[in-house]
Image (cartoon, rainbow, N blue to C red; front, side):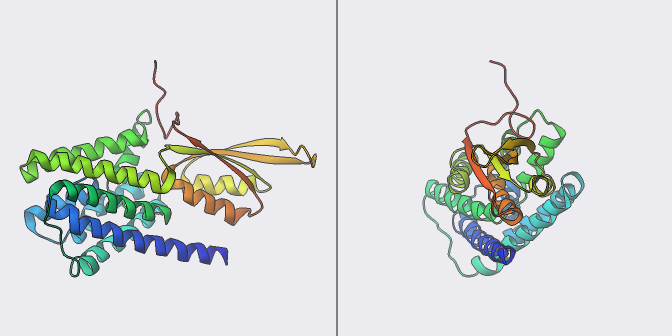
Length: 286
């Protein structure tokens, strides 16, 4: 019953997020000739050149990236990303584009409102346990091949290349600058909706099923965890303590894993401003 409710919730988040994401892309980002990173940014540039629908172009661009994700990341990640990309493409081309008008006003307002709407849509998609693909896939692969590069820096490198390329395609330096504003706005909105301004969270789980939860963390989130022995101060009973750290886009799924595996678990969440180590940020010398 709980899993069915979670499935319905995830589907609703995915549909709502895809709609808001498509609204921001069609009404504000596309008419301003800006490309705020990722596969959607490449699709917008291709749309500017050939005029094909942005949704179809986004899906086409994501296909080789999904193949790479299937090979180098995980099949589950590739499948869930393919589903969310397909839903976004269909809603953008068949629901939003034929009905909603585009904003023809100031480009600064386009970049701001476009970034806010796209960020809100992506946050809801992340909350559904999926991702929009594009730079996420390339960033994760780059981080896996170069572990010393944090995932945030890897994503920044990929999106930065797309922004620089947009200046050439649109033949306008302002396209890159406005794209940077849109990218910043969407990143801030994603952080505030999902996880505040923190990079990650340290989660301490006191549970009777540490093995099951740890296995699902490793399999579904591709993170690791530490299992420690503990003892209740009041009950005097031996127990197990599970410690792990996750990224902001994984936190919602981690809560679902804990709830599904052991509803009686005692969970403490410590928000972190910085996380160092493999999969996060390299420890820098002072």
